[in-house]
Image 1 (spheres, rainbow, N blue to C red):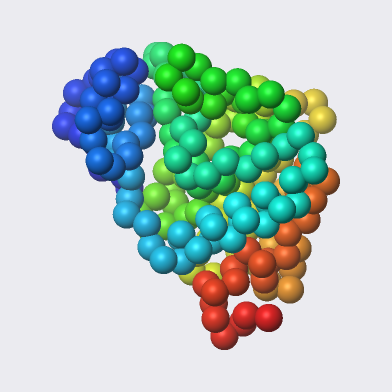
Image 2: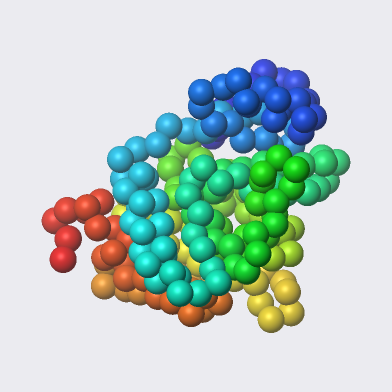
Length: 199
């Protein structure tokens, strides 16, 4: 689990002002400033592989992938006026919308690469808050210790399936991003992560 900075409730403005003076990135969750778990080489490779492939596939469309530095803002959740997260994968289509602090407001896809310390947070707390974004259509949970991707989609009525609508668990599988009209091979996503399986 990510670690919280003390046990104090901060405002969004206090968090943003404080983060400016830090060398590392911190997320803002229900009034708490939380440090992000240290990344592993497989985590970094998966993010790079997905970003690179999506950049090429979407180059001639109105959609663009964003890197891990792009913060996403959740306007309101429960009694809290804002949550700010750094997803591992973000895609926006059309004109990007930002708040006054440069946080993205209208992603259509968000993906998180799971780690032992964050997988429950990504699966539960973050997903619950991401689902409040009207623009979001697809949420991905991506394993780094085995080839596995869980796909959650918003249905035609605008409701979310809380169980994965699809699970890809083999390297010969394909991740189909229907709303974007593109597919990614699992071998491309996990290239160099599992060298013995490289094409």
